Image (tube, rainbow, N blue to C red; front, side, top):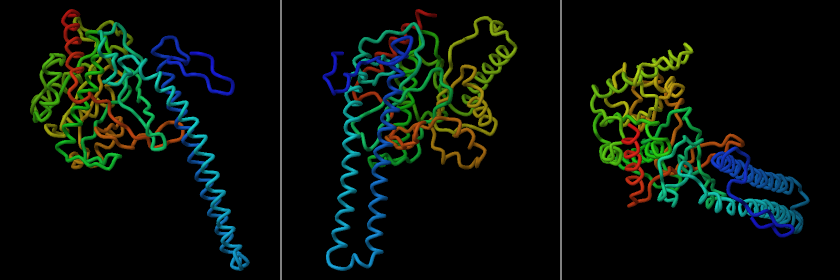
Amino acid sequence: APAAAPGQPAQPVAGDATGWSMDERLYNQVWGMFEDLARSTAAYRSAVDFAESRMDKELEQVLSDPRSRIGGQGDAAREAARARHAQLVAQAGEALDRDLAQLTAEAEVVEPALPPAYARWDSPVWQAYRVPMEIPMALRLGDLHLPEADRIRIPMLVRLPLERGLWIDSGRTGSSDGSFADSHALGRLAMETAVAHAARLLAVHPAGEFTVHVIDPAGSGAQPLAPLVRTGVLAAPPALGAAGVADVLAQLIQRVDLVQMAVRGGAADSLPPGFDTSQQLLIVNDFPHGFDDRAVNQLRYLADEGPAFGVHLMMVADREESSGYGPLLDPLWRSLLRLTPVPDDHLADPWVGHAWTYEPSLVPPGSQVLQQVLTQVAAARTKYV
């Protein structure tokens, strides 16, 4: 970047962070932007709160002083208090605007430089997509923003392999813009969100290194699942009915148990010949439909033990529909990272705890990028096998 003029901040550069590789530098830079925006907003909110409390205190003193009722002293004191409040808020706003201008400039150079694992689905980087040879550090699950900085979108990156399962909440969630989707439309959008996340996971892993299973007991997710089914990237067709649920769960639990025994016994190379060592993802739609008590317990086991041994869970569910189980399922929901199919301010940052609005990373309407990427994934898998 060209040298900055005297007194001006340095021009931002993509990858201008510590790290051994460009992926790591970009990852650290995005997290740095996330922290900077969180702290700048916290400073602004703190300054505004201080100005409000100071004005309230000064106005209270004016009201409690009998002398303020004589002549125009009271009015003058109130005007002075409001003027000091406005000045403090304006100063805080100017400081925030300076920080936002710098962050906006940084976002404008960082976003186009992001690799597929971190990029939006409408990024040109997907047009030159090739199946990678290495697993990336992290994965983009959506964008985060705050009301004070609505034009700045921070990529929400999570480390790979996933340490927690994902829960796409198909319940009646009120979006941050005030719109309210009906349950059927929200359920469909939740499944489309899950498919977009699964497609990205498949796309950023080397051929044969990631396998996706689907449980769709009632077949209600057939249309959103079509890109995965049509391109042949699933391990098997989506499992239907209670029997399908039982078969897939038994298969994945057996896998977790085998890997667990091998790892804990210090004999990771003693797995059966032909054992599939790829990471596994189970997408569950319409939970708890098709699940009996045994299947529910198996699912809880996979959520708890699976991630450490290469089996990950993605639930598309409305928590209210499983309310009949009472507190039995509370640990399951707490163990999963809750995401929403519509913008919703339910995620907190680890520094100051702001409520950030999350927006899922979805494929633009009418785009064929998902089909193109999954077709390449399927072709590479055929060569790998």
